[in-house]
Each structure stands twice: as structure tokens, then as C-alpha cells.
Length: 120
Image (cartoon, rainbow, N blue to C red):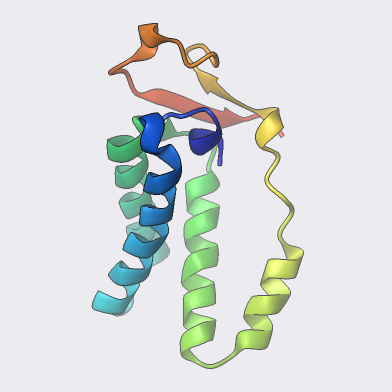
């Protein structure tokens, strides 16, 4: 959300975020037994390549674990567990997050990877 809100992926940031969802879904369909650390690496590559962003706040680890768990529940037909987990998630506090260097998305950062940290 932060990468899209601040345009880290350029003018196509929202489209890249939507593509990312489909890429993850396809990756799960084409591979069996994906482990959270594998998904974390996959997401980190996408964030780096598509949004020129390095996520350093530990969120990819948690998101990857949640996605893998929910996928396993769905595969087992346990949709109630997925719904329960979704209800437990707190809304993303994008306003409390910041990008570095500079959060103003100026042209001086073009071509540099931006590190994202959340101070929430």
C-alpha cells in the first residue's frame, strides 16, 4: 500500500500491485508446498524489481506466513479459518509508514532502491 500510495513503481504502481496479486496466486497454483521463506523471497524480488523498494520492517515475513497459512486452509476447505484470520488483521497504518531516503518521492531518488520501514 505504501509503495502504491507513494508511486514507488512509477505511474503504473496500482497496476503493478494488482499484477503482484495475480503473480502470487499463479505461483501457488503452479507449485506445491511453498514455504513462507520462499514466498518472502518471491515478494521481496517483486518489491525490489517492480517498486525499487527494499522492505526492512519484517512485514514480508509476516505477510508470507499469513498467505501460506491461508492458502493451506483454503486447500483443505477450511474457509472459516481464513475468514477468522482476516477478521483478526489490523488495518494497514500506511500513514504511519515512511520511505527512505526522503519520503517526498522526488526525482533525486530515481533509480535508487527505497527502503521501507513502518513506525507503527
